[in-house]
Image: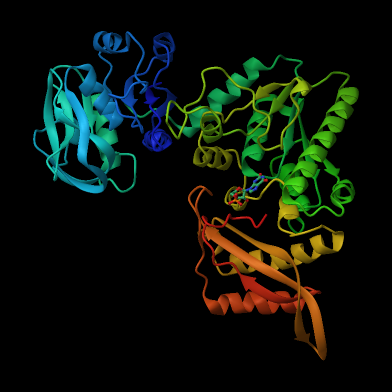
Length: 527
Ligand code: XMP
């Protein structure tokens, strides 16, 4: 396989480079910029990208590749592209000069190609996204100028004999015109690599890997949350191991209207997964009685989940006469990257070399002493790749496109304490809202939509008399990743119809409000 290595120096865009390359059909992987040479050699990259970063190359303690890296690069002749800070590392290493710019170049900037180079095949000038405080005022030995910014700064340079080149802008961000073409030119044109990263191959190789890692009598357990990642992970493992996989689905009672029944039907009828459903509504409700603090609710739900999972695993052990030794989790690549320490001053850390066992994803924190070996087939995949795998494995499209739903479920959408009656009220209102979004063709335009039950009673007039009933808030947001969000701009006419239906059909609700706050300053959930 043609593997592209990204050495990360802490840029907030490093993950984006990896994604763009995957979208082009190549396998990309991020390692910290200071990774030992043996590890880099072991990875056997066919091309290398040095990422941007927030540091200045001349600062003490700024991250640099390890000793021996450049020499190895020179002898191995691996094509290398330095992006922003990555380019400045080349400048400094080979005798050029980097200095603080008079004016920080930030935002869009015109770039003119002044010397033809395969990196810019078919491109002469374009708008690029810059984000840097340093610039190159003397090119390093052996390099020549390829592109200039409209402000006159070095925008691109390339070595005259070695396959090394640098760009001072970010090709990975959407604001850079032709950015993807430039990355493609680097990989296909300069490095002469063919795209060989295909979803079908990923599925086949993961199935083979799982088969070889789990011994013939090994039993595997998986906690299904009802979300896409754990469902696709379980489906893949099931393809590899059949009924040696045992799934547990804990219905907390805090799920959407009929959600437990709907996902169970899909698990069994469509995906044919071996699933045991644990109906634990009573347990969760009694533990949550009288609790209003959101963090306490989260803790109680997480703790109870673990207790139930533990009991189910023990039950399975006595049934099978053998303890399942493996646990499947749907951990994604961004989780792995984000949870690792960033290089000095960086914001987006690269994955650590050692395989840190994380158990808090999807299942709300399984205790370490459970002592399972983890099967995390998506540890180096992005969400859209997992969705694609899901489609190929027959997971229905409507399920794959579902809005994210928080682990603690409706418990964090019922503000204040939780009762069975409140859960029912919220489920009914939420079902009306979500089904109307689907009917109007709006569901897929929205990142996440929900109803929230407020702990406020207001006066209303319904039928013949006055009421003093609860308020429902509606929230719908657009977002790329849940980190920032904007409220969805519904027509008032649509909101009016949702409001009328909820007030007419849900007992104990007499007022509807729509949340028009973005994130930040608000969060997506209300608790
Ligand atoms: P916020 O409310 O922080 O949410 O803007 C961002 C995304 O995270 C989800 N979320 C959670 N997911 N457990 C989860 O599994 C939680 O405790 C939790 N809290 C928020 C939220 O639904 C949104 O998609």
